[in-house]
Image (cartoon, rainbow, N blue to C red; front, top):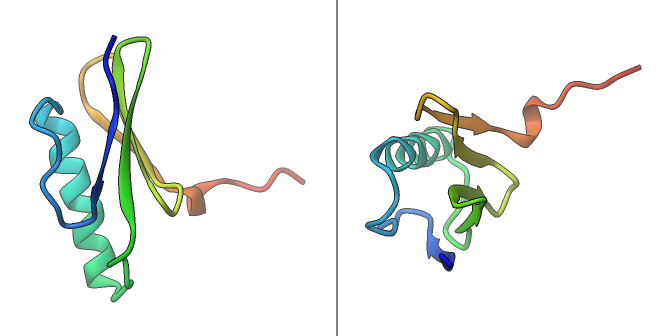
Length: 83
């Protein structure tokens, strides 16, 4: 069984995270800084689904690995409206 954890935006991600996810986390954090978003109180949450890491930010942004091992970032603002 793998336990998840939480860490602050800008903090050190858990060492057990795949490099692709760490790079994606840093990319999201860089975008937040570039947009002057105050994420100083936000945290990342690491959980595992079927043994695979999923990282979610307090704003709903999530990162997971696709079958090829590439990080996929899902931004809650990217949701499309179905009318």
